[in-house]
Structures are given as structure tokens and as C-alpha cells.
Image (tube, rainbow, N blue to C red):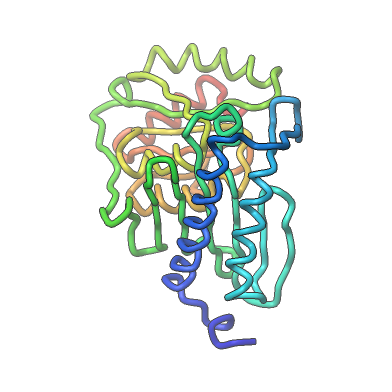
Length: 269
């Protein structure tokens, strides 16, 4: 095993993730105009996967493993392996597949690098806007070359909130009921269709808060680091680690109030 595998540099991992994400972004942009040739359902009829999801994942894996063949992999479209190094890559090759299939240019490539189970570097690349969000554990986060910093809303009623909805229609109905309660207590709600971009939006001050049920580790690993390094409170209702049950990212000035609101409406139930 190489010295790089034994003592991985988060900055070097970030550089590699950047290269992979940008190449995958070019692939996705090239396919956006013509549309994916194969679209299938996964967990429900509305949970889609396209041939471009798989092509993007294949390209990312080729870039990463060419430099670091001993690393572990966890990727949305099924690439899952355990390697002998301390590094694991957590990959969402196309976050926002439904947008992509409909030709809506709101989607991203998300790649995070973990060392010994801790996310130390993350990239969320938005090829349509040519925006690349990055984060390094303990060093900050950036949009292209500009440092990110969260907003400081005075109270929850003036906070713009992002969210997403489950693919399961029965769960969406429950979420819709909760949303009617939330709408009356915040500035407004936004729903982009990309958890990774929503997390980055909190870090960039484009949203004051974000929450969503039913995400997966690959949806939030990179974006969660980027939001946290920009100063956001990231976790679930009860602690600092997001879960599949609930992920939230929120400006510190309204974090306690936002958690109370989500608890009141049963956002994690």
C-alpha cells in the first residue's frame, strides 16, 4: 500500500474529487439536450434512474480508482466495495435525476471523501451554472474561489426554507400536511429537487434553512460538510449527525427555533 493510502491528504482527495466531478458534469451537460435514452424506476414509480446516472458513476469511478485503487466506494447506483485503505468515496453521480429527465437544469454531481468514517472533503458541482461548491474539514468551504458563510436571520419568520419530498405518495401526503403548518411560520418555502444543492445553498446564504426526510448518505455527505464548514448547524432534530430519517441545515441564529418548529409539526415522524 502506498504512503498516500496510509496517510491520505484531505486537500489531495479534494483535488481528485474536483477533477472527477467536473468531468462527470461535462458528460451530464452533453446528454441534457438529447435526454437520457433509458429511464427506469427504483424504489417507486417516481424514483428514477437514467443511463446518464450510471454513465456518470462509471466515469467518476474510473477517475478515482485510476489514482487510488485501494479505496472503498459507496455510490448511489450500486457501486459498493470495501478496500484496504482508510479512505471511502461517497458518490451521487446525478443528484436531481427527475429534474434532469425533464430537462430542468437543476442537478449536481456530489462526491465526498471520508477518512476513517469522517467526511474530510466534499465537492458538489452544478454544471448548468458552472458553480462548484467545495469543503475541507476544519478549513472552510467555497463557491468556486469565494469563501462561503451562512446568513444570520433575525428570526424564523424571516427565514427562507428549502425542503424536499419523499417518493412514496403516502409519505408525501403527511409531509404536505406538515408543510402547511411550516409555511405560516417562515418567510417562504423552496423545493429545488436536489438535496446536495439545497445543503450548499444554506452554506452560501441562498437559503436560511433546509430539511428533508428520506435522504441517503450520498445525497448529503458532501453538501453537509460544505454547509457545516460555512457555519451552518447540520444534523437532525436531536444531534449533530443527519440520518436517513431527517437531515437539516440551518443558520445558527434560528437553529433552536427551527428544530422546535420541525418537532412541533412532526417532521421526523
